[in-house]
Length: 561
Image (cartoon, rainbow, N blue to C red):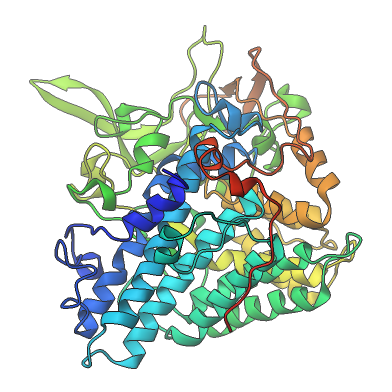
């Protein structure tokens, strides 16, 4: 079949998801998603958009989000799987590539189908406000998918009509510039048609869309750069939208960074957009990523397959004070984000239970203290903490094997503060702008660090973003944003990252260590070789081989309005 993954997005849009849970995640009845009898009330139209918040993203979130976003971005290491992403060698047959590409076009297909169904079938009882709300949700999700597509693959096909694709003999890629223009238009429509407050908990709002516009314009400033100088008009727009969200949305940073990832944190007042997962027997709507990243079944529910995942040496080196003289001296960091993101020996997590034995057929547990490596161990890992929530008993009984209830962030208020700072810096080498420093410090000091008093540089903001959003799938996309206007600097950063994860972490005492030493171990390659030939991820072979037109030069997209 031609265009296999693009067709998956189209055909998935003609299928339905079964009912599976409370609140707005209740699904329309089976076989009615495209039934003219379904879109007759406001509630039915809103129910039809609910799958856009979870199931359509499934293939991306499960593994590809962190394999591309963090392994490829350099924050995280994996010893035995997804090595092509770790070594910056993601190919046209890489698992993460196929999973991501397929998921993004499923999102596009489902979004397009919902837009068309509302236009064709919405009954007289459906208000214009609700119709526009649901269409705005669909266009927001479509734009988010295209933001990922163009960042990963460069020029990609823009699809607005699923049926036209099915009837087309070939599909053309569209230029990067017009894909970003398409993304901008979708987010602008969403901002104009979504309410200031969510119609139901977890639904996106105007501020979700304006936050995405801040991210979009910051990136577009590089896409449309000239001679390495970012477009000032778009930097100004990024700054404007970021400040609007900061000052008008009513959102606030949580006081404690770790609380962002302690269950139940869903839809808290820092969140602007989350994928909504629920504890359910339906695999499509439960968070399965937790199974993939949890380091051991000792703290899981018959899963916990992330034992070879951990912070890269480069990532650990960014936490001020942690690695001293290449690890030879004990180090410690005040940065509270480390413990909330990665586990070091002796770190305690009373909210997570760890199996310590069995007694009379009953599991015995105690609060987790992350263990130190054995005396004869040749490696250890700073295992993943972020999004790891523990056993069923730790989440009120609401989890089982590959069925976890916690949401995954797509946009947080903290990013608005850092976008404002970067947009203010713009094309300068540094900035002492008072508001930029104030906003930067909101994020920096929340992590337990002293006030930043120096001028801010791009490197300062970049490293702050890396520590703030590690294991949230953003590191790679920060590098893409840089690559648009300064590719050589992007290559230099990637090629200087020690991506190795084979090391020993030795606490000065157990429990309650006050410092750690780090010793590199192992023979696995530690550095990548990023260049113009491998920076953009190739379109999956299964797609390009069946759609040869994707190898043609991209063409500008012709907008209909």
